[in-house]
Image 1 (cartoon, rainbow, N blue to C red):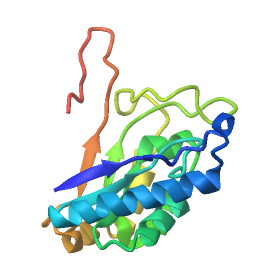
Image 2 (tube, one colour):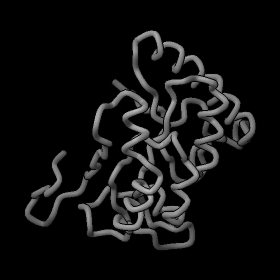
Image 3 (tube, one colour):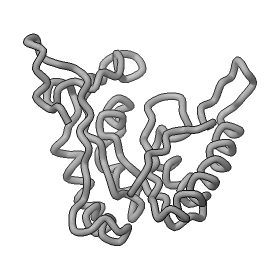
Image 4 (tube, rainbow, N blue to C red):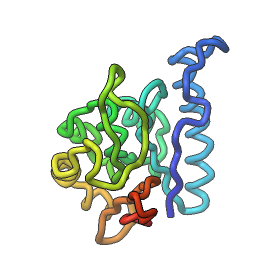
Length: 175
């Protein structure tokens, strides 16, 4: 029903003389093509929150890219761990408005000069992501109603992203 769109030509690369403005334009152009194809296939496009350096690293940038696409099938996915890495406050989720239809529950630490030591997708609850606050604002932003309007049915969706296992090799969140 949906595919995830992360950046596709939208990450600035200053060594190759690709600045942020041109990278955003590249992402916009690519998104339009992807959205058109997906519309024909009756699919949705979900923009993914990307931490640091990319064009989709803020709520505002994601919403702007979605609006620029002028496509009725483009929505936003809030990766809660990525928001936490950048120290984006949970109430900023309200900026997604009716574009928010999905979220990723991922956990990381957000320590260090850039706000993180590295993205780990740790076992949920072992990092510093404030899930209670982020989920509160997802529901305040009417994620369930947005999902229904987008054609997902009666439930909103949250995907769990976990790559790390505990000391016994057990991943408590295998999906």
